[in-house]
Length: 345
Image 1 (spheres, rainbow, N blue to C red):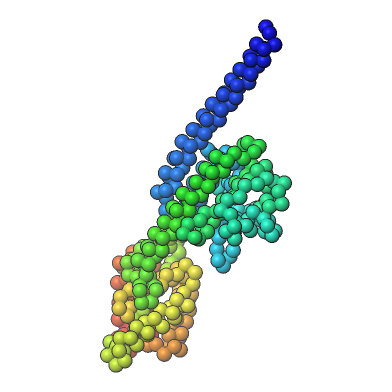
Image 2 (cartoon, rainbow, N blue to C red):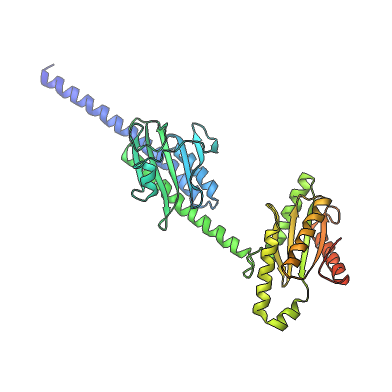
């Protein structure tokens, strides 16, 4: 074989190897795109922010090929927090990584909006984590000019980043940001629908749901709860004497008093007109007397005359309808005794 023929053969062999490499990369690309298509479809119809994050982290691991993924939540009061992470497994855990906030770091630049995505290497001074593995990508979840969170990915199965891979990460966070914003908007809409427009407390429909949930929780944990019905004494006289604007102010003032006398886990709402409800969870007989007594003392100190009727689960009733009926009877007993006080069923 001549030298020319040998050279041509070597060139052909090299070209065949290059074609095989390109074909293999194309297959990987197609497999990745098919996997991401499924992930995009799932994220697009999800409205729970936490579930969106879970699906995004899982997509980052497979098919994108990153062993570690961390979602940083952004809160105006608490700042940035490594909320959830996935590290080498399919198990989503609470974030625990140490963040590097040095000036010029990728994290600081992305938070400031200087870049929407940052790609770097572990040896870079801009690496967001103290234990960055291999090359990394940091991508912001931004929608309507608001940053909803940051997705950090590293420990990829390849040694060097490819532009089309980092572009797919950007596409993933874009889809997630739109879906998360829609979910937050839906949650805010549902929250507004559950609130009384005058006082901001839960409305009657929401109270019914909250009561059923509280009863189910009390039954499951073998604990008791109180259903407190609060009625403003002679509210019609207040409206007739001072006008409805003053009456509304009285109801708002009452709502603030009820809210500050509630504990974490308790529920406060406006049942109808001048009737309000408190659902006090996990209370025994002694605590029940103390809580209701303190509430009445606070109402009187604020110049509000109110009658209260109190019923306990499971002592007085075993379901929502029974509790309402028992509390209503106790309320009328208070009114019959001269108003401005409380009665237990």
